[in-house]
Length: 451
Image (cartoon, rainbow, N blue to C red):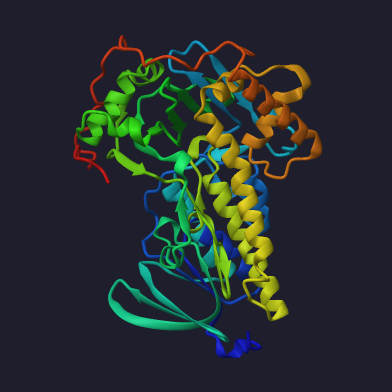
């Protein structure tokens, strides 16, 4: 690469996408006095799924200068997670205050429309130039820079010369889709169906902020995420083959049927009232085989997304956004924005993805769930596992050997009964049917299939 002349650039960096990865990256770069152009194709606030955060996001807020005190009462405090079997007979509470290597166990359940808007506004306040309702059209790479073409809502193509590009465009994959680097995860072919409800009771006290996960005998699961006010995010995740084998109906009918055959979900949804369209996502776990090249990095969902059972989405996105900013800032200082210089960034992303994927893939196997739902009090295994679920991706040796023992027990459970087997058998056919929770008249929400 020829020596750079930043005076020939309009911006040091173009960030494509204003979600958690893009906004975090833009804020971190702007706070380092880099000239940042952020292009977001939508107008915030906008709906997005993935409302549950992990404990270690507090460290990320520190790194971009965002004070959680600004959240006020808009978000629900989260201190842990509750896991329960479909019949309600076996449950486990994951308390982040008991997790190893988790000095700040408090986190939040967030309505993403509000949370993402706050992050985008923070990037603007930090000094980034932010354009909403603006589509990135294409990027032309040259030895001395990148030309990014984009267009606003009114049309009219514009261009900007930049030193580097961060693709934080989510599943759209502005660069990653074009470069053909993204690979679906064959072990995590899942379908999610979800909506927002009111009228679902919550536990008393601090545990009222828990995410509650109901494990289904078909190795799928439900989430119940409390949001501000009475709003509750409810969704089910099942294997693609399980979903495809079901009678086809509207999304409303499908979600109601999943609830009806899961007794614990029935119990919680008896007085539920749906207040949003039902939406669906499919085959949402993937990983790029490359996250960087000359003058570009992938961040957040543009590069990888992992099944949401342990709520890693926002944390992984924000972490990659901060690290992408640090990698590019160092590269600008050194005058080197080559793929070789970005290799450490790629290695960290890959290692972090595999670290959490081990737990996610395990959750879809009965032996893992048997051991996970009935942890032994010996050797401190539960606090070690909890630290991973709180977002710890760099465990100490003391945590690592405990995790190794945990997975050894899972392996043994395949062949001998280490703990009672609670995750085998068919779905109950005796579960009472429930109708699709009604949508309140006049709330502006239709009962047609969501998208």
